[in-house]
Length: 102
Image (cartoon, rainbow, N blue to C red; front, side):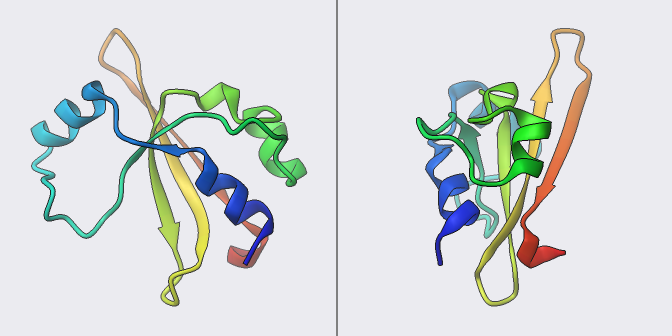
C-alpha cells in the first residue's frame, strides 16, 4: 500500500522521554499491544488535502504530539490519534482517518 498511509508512517518517530514518562504513569509498558510514537513531520508534503487542512502540509501543527496509529483488522493503517499536553495539565486529542477508513 502507498499513498497517505505510507506518508503518515514516515512521521512516526521513537517516543520522546516525556511521552515515555506519561505512558508509564498510565500503566503502559513495553508489553502492550498498542503502538505509540512521537510525531515528527516528514520532509515531503502530505498527499491528502484533508490532513493538510487540519495539521499543515507536513503535519507541523502536531509536531511532538504523542501519536497512536489506528489499524484495520487486516493490519492496514487507517488513521491516527494525536495527543498534545499543555503546561497547565490539559490535553488535546486530534484524530485523522484515511479514505480507507471512511
